[in-house]
Length: 102
Image 1: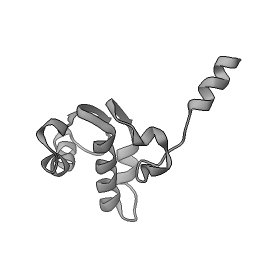
Image 2 (image 1 turned 90 degrees about the vertical axis):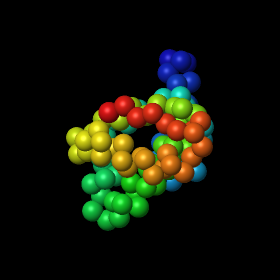
Image 3 (image 1 turned 120 degrees about the vertical axis):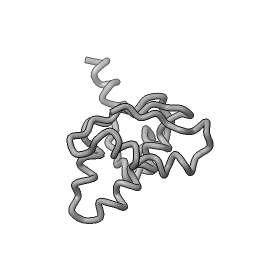
Image 4 (image 1 turned 30 degrees about the vertical axis):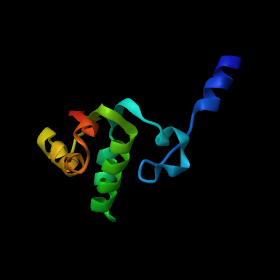
């Protein structure tokens, strides 16, 4: 039971579009997994474009240099997803470029 309490104390809820409120979203990771979050952001009827841009910015900041984003999408093709992230990659130094697997 003590182990479960310790694990629960590590859980946090964060907003990928506004990561400043969650310490886990202010760290850097070698791999990030998205199983539908980008799709949900993309389907928002109010301001999907700016929210997609905020998502891309946040995920880029979460990844270590050369980090890997594993993304599952039912709404976008692989090429479309890469295009969404291409502008952010163009703004970063070569060592910060992320890899995307769809």
